[in-house]
Image 1 (cartoon, rainbow, N blue to C red):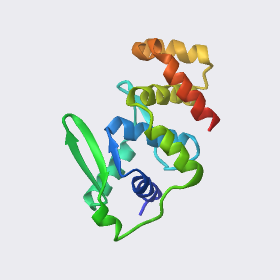
Image 2 (image 1 turned 180 degrees about the vertical axis):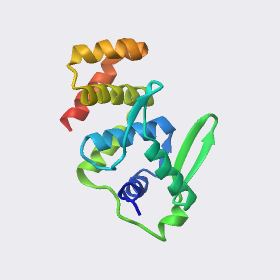
Image 3 (image 1 turned 120 degrees about the vertical axis):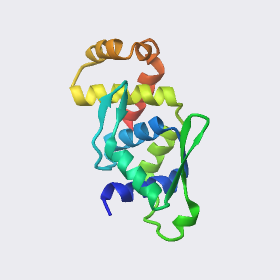
Image 4 (image 1 turned 135 degrees about the horizontal axis):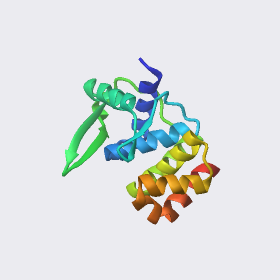
Length: 160
């Protein structure tokens, strides 16, 4: 079993339910950026952060019955299959990682997405704030116009 698989099992034992594929990708990305290793590669495409490796791991967990995937309206939902957890429990997240996860789970999708993009641009392009803002202005103009909540979350993530 891969390390990422075990870490995702721990994640779902704590979360039990995630509403939205993008939110799942962004939460795992931000956890990984803060040192909680999932060993997943991310790239920025189509105005979002994406990891095909995360999709593969989620498919695996769904196929073995650890999580359920379904749609409510047009939003993909991921839930822990509690029948499965009695068979294997690798241990829940705790301490700093749990506190950070709670912060991300309590954040609305738009702010989470925007903060993840700021984090991505800053850490993968080694850019200063002005350069980040110029890049965001070109790639995601809506984000540039609503940067205050995203920057506030970004600063909170940086200080975590």
